[in-house]
Amino acid sequence: MTRTAYVRPYRHADQQALADICVRTADDGGDSTHLYPDPGLMPALFAEPYAHLEPDLVFVLDDGSGRAVGYVLGTADTRRFVEAFRETWLPRVADRFPEPVGEPESLTERMTALLHRPERMILPELDEYPAHLHIDLLPPWQRKGHGRELMSAFLDALHRKGVRAVHLSMVTVNAPARAFYDRLGFQVVDVPDPGALTYLGRPTEGVEPTGWAGSGWRARERARDAGSER
Image 1 (spheres, one colour):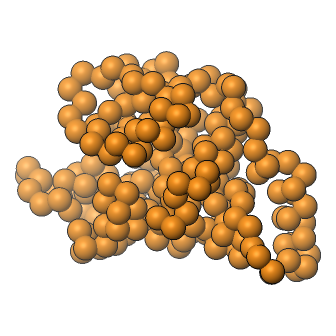
Image 2: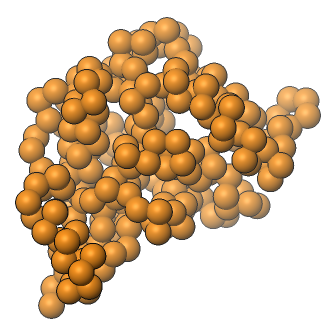
């Protein structure tokens, strides 16, 4: 039987897959395994805190067998998320990733320094876009419409929560990613001295309907829970 990939809410059992996807896409969309001695660093920064703090805003692309091969995750309120990151998340990972002493020199030290500075996410220019997100797909699942499906599920969830707008940051030279966000209606948000990043934002309303929250998704979940779908 041919399996069909579909978007569904995150489950705790997806935790390792979430980390793996993050590692395999953290080098500007490519595999970052060779860049960091501890492969847990990128997930600790960009994936796991969202699953821990706001699991209801994590959606995965299921390959049809129960395995997550992509995700979108984020927060409805960046300022509140930063507070929770410092108070709740950082103490969980600080022993494994201690804050560098002095000016960071290596790539690992620079990224670890970011982990210890969650306040970097708060920029006054982004206050009109209180939510933010990260989206990643394993390469075999890219450019097949799944990114749009994931984004639609996430934006719809924000809209249902009454969140008016969302932002994201991306490496400016990543032209394919920029084209994807442009097609989804994201526009540049001017931020002073953004460095190598571009900030983009859009309203959460006007989201295309998708099947993740409809009867098809619910039927699959019921069947899976009953053990009738493999």
